[in-house]
Image (cartoon, rainbow, N blue to C red; front, side):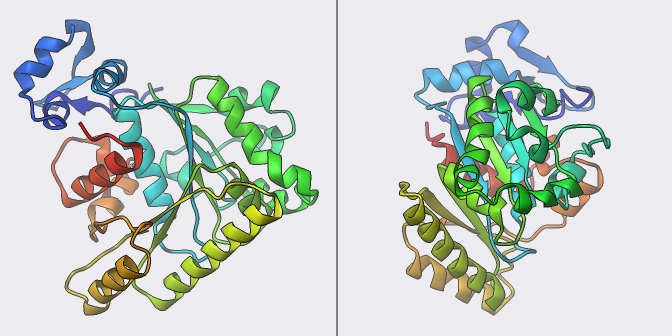
Length: 316
């Protein structure tokens, strides 16, 4: 795992969570918990130590499945999924990204495209106990991915049976939980296929990223309708719904209006702050990273950090 040292929390970031000082945090940790990264002035903290520190401060690490879904493409699903996953790993959550999209954008983002003979989701879901962990690949100490390829497009044919639709993604997620994963982040295709149906059956939380355009909002409505319909069909408790407004540009009047309208229309589901537009996302992806690969302060890091802390209940 050559990128193990990329996704680490700094002492300063950890201290800011509960208003303590970096010196206080350092005093509470062992020397073996502290990591000096080349080219980084700040001292970093191992994910194991961050996890222990947060647990002592009341953060719950109970396993959960978070799916990123919108039936419209171009809303920031993959960016949100991989950025959420990397930040969660820094906070000590053992995290696995499950790339369900045959376009494999999340896999491309980490340069984790599988070889022709490597197993992907469509190969492992029928026998998760024996195959899942062999398909998972490491990005960092607490960060892993089950990559995708074009072959995942076969899922619509494989999951014709309703029982398979209900249990395919859940079975894979359950196996990951059994192997110590706290957070499973699903990146889904922008279509209404059996992979989406199976994902909805497995998710504890569904995050719907959206922008200010009319098609994005239409995708939101269709996605919520589909979630409710599937849960009714399979007699399941509906998952928590979170709306995440991405690519927000305050200079665009329609963006401000759309955010305000959605906040009023979905007061319980709407994340109370948008993700501002930033070139940092593109720059990070060009380097096969996310914005959390370095501790440099940016609006992109600030926005997603606030969102991830809210999503995972990191409120010290």
